[in-house]
Length: 639
Image (cartoon, rainbow, N blue to C red; front, side):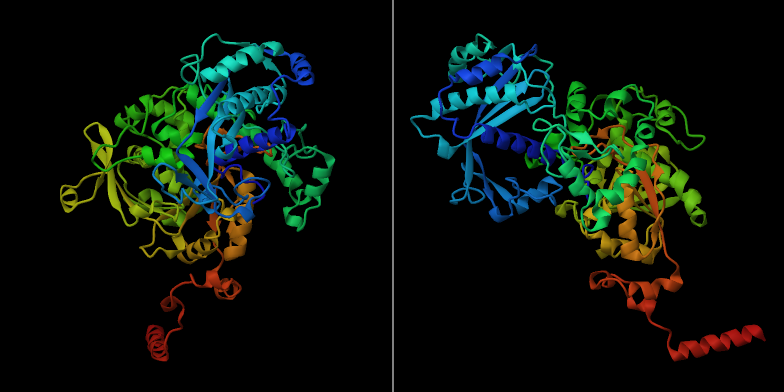
């Protein structure tokens, strides 16, 4: 896929931004980092910059334990430690490994281990990071480490004033707060010549105010050369307004890209149609909708300002994707205490029962919020988009597209959720399905190689225990006493390798067929089962790519995309395009090809797909004896 904004973990996007800024900083200060702080020409240029009324913070963070080791230095591209195929935090393991110098874990003594001794970071009062620098242990000799750190702190502040990493203009702060005492004493003398004041005493803590919030606003870049907005002037394509470029050279290069189906010439008209949905995607009833659907939306600032930084809300944050946080804060526990996966009114939501039963199916967030008694200022829709999307598919879409299934008359439903790693970590949220459909016995089967390997073949039940919603292992005693809840099974493997009973429905969230080769085997498996299969996507562009993959893999079709009324209201702001991305924004279903063409078309598949063809017992022609018996029976019927 040409654009992966809705699928790459935010921590990867943000780390790429940090290293891009740092490379520019090293380039601008090449040969100058060891010079004295006083530099008349530089001072004159900085003194001419306008003042920023907010306070800036300079932090000097010391690190003795964590280091990293490149696994494949020859694959480093553009100075980065990973290539474009890295979409998730775990993918970084292909390119580098973290080591612990104190415990010796992870080849900490290897010659190619790189240790960052000091990390210097400049942060604005609003929470935006303006620049970073780091000193490797090879740069920190014992007799000069303090002086080197002071000097680098001064140069870093100067670069942040001349070329701040955020989307703002060059500027200088009225005052700077500094945490490290030696650096503080050094900069009190040297920053005064720039017209920048330093707070009298070193700062304690991360910020000087209690209501400080972290910001990680997206900084746009050219789609072709990847240069950022702080380096060049970016303009969107004048035809579609979707793709960002820094020059005509980059525009022409992308327009004439080969093969043609990946060139912008091929996609431009389609992109123009996709952009026409931008306003419709933002038409949701929430009081905060104008902020969260803006092209400049800062999700980290939005969550931090509302204290939505823990529990299940952490999955929406950039911090969630670091391994340390995932290991330290599990999403849920079995019986031994589930922790606090939800916060404030979100936790109360699962505990409380609706005041009245549903008389008709819900088809909008406004109807759901009214039924649940929620304020339209509550952003819990960003979490509940997954169970509500399942509910909408069952109650509205399947009856329209697969009426022969009679899904609304079924008393029990088995639903397969494919490639469900992200959704599985938010497991308690699916209890809302039991509230919405109390008379249906639900079994959710989570399948995917991105699920935790230790949970493979696990079975448990989501149910009420007193006023709380918990997950419990299924036992014979539970079955005997008729414990009511949602049955859950986990299979940590690719979907096409699964050997279980046929489900009533298959659902995949934000699937991205073009980013995972296992779909080339999974889609033919679904073609054989011919079960209703629905998928959500982040954008119309993604739906278009998925339709191409479906055609190649099965010879079938994907339906036209359907705007999902229960999509997430939080926009995913892309770095290299203006396409509106939202989790579960659009839905489509698989249109299977006719049976009479199956054999001919299956033979054209690659060998890897043919391996997952239907079992031989289904395809083998009937024996002569069986044919003879069948002919005899037909003759009897005629007589």
